[in-house]
Structures are given as structure tokens and as C-alpha cells.
Length: 407
Image 1 (cartoon, rainbow, N blue to C red):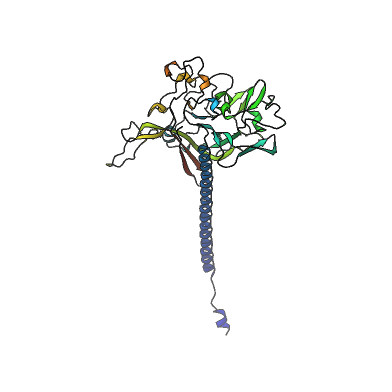
Image 2: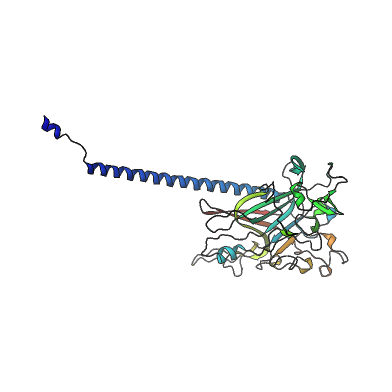
């Protein structure tokens, strides 16, 4: 019996070590698998969130464009009370930046220096904004809106330069029947645009006081948001990088709520790498691809585009030089050329008839003294918004196209 007890079966030290090793290996594999699932879920959630935010931004831009108050045709009369439409095309281009300058690098920045400004009508009801304090709200069916980008303060760690996309909204009211606006104006002790931190109203300076703008007032460039009211051509206030902003009395003015108690109220999208505003040019032609070997059809602005003999009509960068009149430089009589605007900036504007003073009227282009930069109707615009997701390291794009109604 003692001999049988000594021969009782059991595990040796080697067997225990092997079993422990197998167990640790299985546990490590399971932990790795959970890590993979966790990263995949995080990336999927980030991608879904980015897509949702981009769709919401595109929807808001479509609403604004649907409500454009004026016919997008130059020479509007202020007496018609229709507002304005304006595009500032910066020197950056998607083709040159995305595919050439950044080839082989991690920087995905493309066309981010375009500015889109116009007056719009609320899709339903009214726009609302701050009046003096956060708990006071004022409403109007019309607003002056500005869409533009500025470099984000916090950048991803992988070298990609990202921007914040802003949407500034200023209500258009011909009359403000509230106590601060005595005689429908307010003392101009706080300069424009600093006063926009307190009042979400489109204002103009006149006689040392600030007056609310009507749509007719905004037909005139000198009365618009972030424009120079001092002298013709009342250019959009752009910094050396062709972005909305300027320096006044040593202080950087950007037209945003950054560095104020209202920071982030005007940011509509983050991690933007392209905000490309293009115009429809009926004379721009496609460069047809071939089947042997297969090559894609190219359009003006695409890398590799040389010249087109295909179908006419394409969305191009304003002043890009690959189409009809809208691809050519602006009329110098508009004054919207260097040095009044930064080098490489091109402007489309619906213009105002009140600039043509002392001329022979609007029927003789040769006699114009202050002509619009492009004296042709704008048939449509396309806005391409591209964002970078640092979590999934993916780039997503949404495009908004809008066709304008002819008067």
C-alpha cells in the first residue's frame, strides 16, 4: 500500500511550466484581439462622427445657398434691396498643393483660403442672434453670412495641417426698435468688428455712429462684414495669407470669436484640410480620357489637365486660367487687383450700380469707370469640403453644388 501511494500520478515541474506558458500565450492573444477590436471600434466611431458632422455642415451650407437673396448677376441696384454675393478665391489650389507640393509628405493641406460671403433668407421662420447679452435674443428673416477657414490652434501630431471652418452670421434688420439704438443707431465707441461680440447685427459706421444694415445697404461693399469702409474698392479684409483678417493698432482682427468669451460659437467644422469654392464656367472643357490604357476624364484644376476638347461646362477655380471669362483675371477697373488685395487673390462680386458715377451708364462697358471684376452672371458654385480624421487617419470629402436662378 505504501508503494502504491508513492506512485500516485501528478504533474511534474516541466508540465506546469509548459501549461503556464500556454495559458499566458492564450491570454496575450485574447488581449491583443480585444485591443484590435477596441481600436477598430474607436476608428469606426470616429469615422461615423466625422461623416455626420460633415453632412450637417453640407446641409447648412445648402440651406444658406438656397436662400441667397439676390440674383447673382453684376450691377445690382441698392434701391432694389436685394443684398449681395461675393467670392474671394485665394492663391492656393487643390491640384498644386495636394498632388505637387505635398507629394510624399504627410501634409494633406489643400485649398483652404477661399472665402464665401452673401446675404441669405432663413429657410423657415427667422435667424436668431445675440442682442447685448447672452439672454437677449433678436430675430430677422435675413442674415449676412461668411464661410471661411483659419488655422486651428491645436494640430495633429503627424504633421498634417488642419483648419477650423467658420460660419459667421449677422442679422440684417432695417430698423432696431430697442433702447440702445436711439434714432436707429448706436454710438460708435466700440469699433466694428469688435462690437459683433455683443450684437449679432450687420452694422455700418456712419457719422460716428453704427447703423443697422438693410439688404440695400449691403449691396454696397463698404457696408459689409470685414470689408474696408475707408476707400474704394472697399476690399475684403485679408491678411498676408489671403485669409479673412487684418492688423489694426497692433491687434490681429480675424472676424472670429476666437480668444473671446464666445469662442467656438462660430466654428462649424474642425480638422478641415480643404474648403474649395469653385464656379461653373460654361466654356471650360473636359479633357477626355482614353480606353487604351484606361485614363480618367480630367477637368480644369485636375492634376495633369492640359487642354480640353470634350464636353463644355465645368466647375473651376475663379481666375484659374483654364476656361472662359471666369477663368481669366479680374477687370482692373474693379480695383480688386494687387495691391488692393493680396497677390493671387481673385474676387467675384455682384457689384453695385452706385459705383458707376460720372460715366455714361451701364450700357457701354468701354466707358465704365469702376467695373465689376467679372461682368457675367454666375450660373452655379461647387464647394468641396475635405476633412482629416486623426483617429482613423482617413480623409473624407463632401461636395455641395448649387445652381442659381436667373432673374
